[in-house]
Every structure is written in structure tokens, then in C-alpha cells.
Length: 296
Image (cartoon, rainbow, N blue to C red; front, side, top):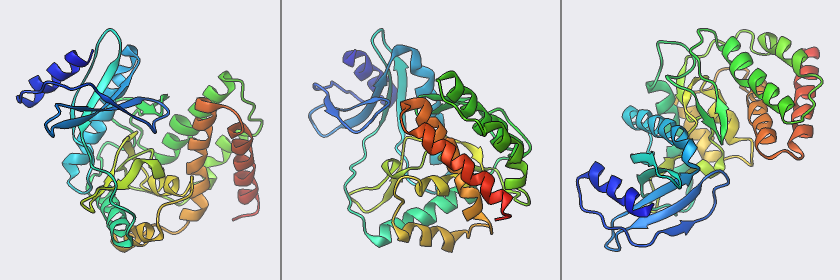
């Protein structure tokens, strides 16, 4: 397996690469991660999963390529991807993470994310050139002209359907779907290239001080979905939000839309992990319906 991956790296880079035994890197809950090195300073980050999931890695590579082409924010460059009899794999540029958490670096990350959102705009509407995954859950990206329709059908309705298949009960789910046009009324976002899964574990600072984001679930959507998710599991540094707002201020009403955008991820966490996420999702649905009923 590792010989095959090393040969693929060598063929892609046109540089000799004889791999040393890989070093396992923890932290992932979907894929396994490794540092693959030649023992002479040349090293790559390799993600692996089941052989049948090679298209998941191909889609991730495409998202990284598109972000890289925008030349706004650092992402790991995809080197190659494929499958063996044992695994599918994605080989990425090695990133030397561990640059601390200075206010300046996080402010730069905020500005650069805003630049990505502003520079990478689709003229085809909301969606993407292919379906991909959010974690290991399928993410449907059919091109849609209307943002309300896209978010309702391709995001919330799809996750609710999966949730019911997985044994979840969401008694107010249809009522929420019926209310989404009201919850997003008056909001007309541009279709920006978004990271799509931007929680705290998918952004960091390199030892050089340069900010970086990785592990995307990319598509063209409302830029606010990225900002909302950064607040879902503890939030980024306050400097990050200040930097973003300085570069491209958010539209009025973001705080009202944020819970609806984060509901997608709570539902997805139920579909991935089960447990208390069902109750959390139902609580958020109830909150959204009550907020609309009160005119908030």
C-alpha cells in the first residue's frame, strides 16, 4: 500500500521519493492521518479511508484546488489521490502547524477568508460542479438559482431525511422547512466559494505565522455559513471576526440567520454520531420557530 502511494507521489511530482515507515497522526474522526516522509526532510500528509471512498478525496482535492486558485488564503496543496485494494488516499502538502494564537495572525485569517469569499464568486448560482461530503455524509450540490431553495432542499431537508432514516424524530421539521423562506426573507447573498466545514479544528496558524484552513466541504453558498460555523463549537479568536468585518462587513440580520445555518451541522452530527445531537437539533428547530413567531 505505502509503496503504491509513494510511487504515485513520485510520478506526480517527478521527484524521487522512497518512503520511510509512515507515522500515524491523531485527531481525525472520519479519516486516518499519516506523515509520510523519505527520512531526508521531504514529507507529506496522507489521509486514508475505505477503498470505496476515493471520490470523497477527489472532491476534497477539487475544493482545495479552487481555494488555492483564488490566491486569498493558504490551504494545503493536493498532490495526488487514488485507491489501492486496502485504502483510498489523499496526499497533501505537509503543513508545519503550531504557530500559536496571536491576535495578528487570527485577524489575518479573518481578512483572508473575507477575500476568498469576495474573490471567488459563481455566475451559476448556488451549488458546485459535483456532490461531495460533509464529514462522511453526502452533500448535495445541484446548481440552484435561489439561495432559499438551495438551503431548504439541498441542506436542511436532505439532513432531516437522513436523520429520520437513522432513527431520529424531528416532529417540527416540516414546519421549519415551510418557514425557511420567512427566516431568510430579504436576504440576497452572492454565491461565494465557502469552506463549508469551518469549525475550530479546520483552521490554524503555521509556525511561520501564516494562517491556514483545511479539510473543506466546499461549494458556492452564502458566505455567512462559514462565519456561522466558526461560532458553533467554541468560536475563533475575537480578532478573527474583527479582521473579517474590516475586510467585508456582514449584512444586517446575520445573528438571526446564524442558527438556521448551524442547524445543518447539528443535524449532520446526529447523522454521523447520534446521541444528544437529536435533542440539540430539535431544540434549535424550536428556537427558530419561536423566534419567527415573535418577529425576531
